[in-house]
Image 1 (cartoon, helix red, strand yellow):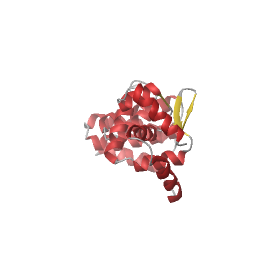
Image 2 (spheres, one colour; image 1 turned 90 degrees about the vertical axis):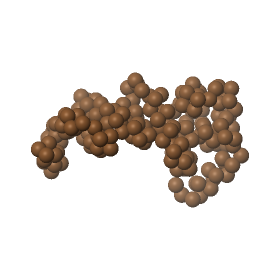
Image 3 (cartoon, helix red, strand yellow; image 1 turned 60 degrees about the vertical axis):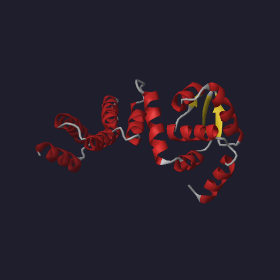
Image 4 (cartoon, one colour; image 1 turned 90 degrees about the horizontal axis):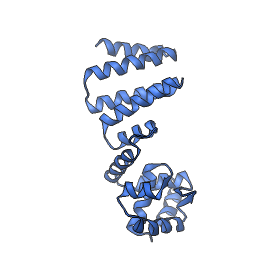
Length: 193
């Protein structure tokens, strides 16, 4: 984020209270449009405290409300706010967003939030599911990306060998369909060891 943008963000957030600042942090981490109920669930804040905080943040020109949902008006502002959120707070918020998305069709988002929360077992499962959904849709390049991320999550979660073998077999199929022989050979070598 350019320093001039960071300076503008700093000026606009200087007068905001803690709840309004938390709203901005939550929206930055969520990286999606949220309605008041969703914001309240992620933040564990009641509507009575949330509405004035939203009004303050909107009044500062940092977020906008459209059709009952709140979001950042500019991606660079969201990135600037995200960068200012302490790492431990980011992890907690990513975990809360993942909890909100649990059971939804947003498996890619769920995987990303789980990974950023450091919940590697969950991230593995969701990346694997996202890869399978992409395969079913014929989006093999996307499936390849998700399989690669699932493989990294598997290593971080230190899961069993059987789940890794299953993952690598599916990953190899996608690489074959994409004619990515070098990566395919690497996966096949991993399966042999």
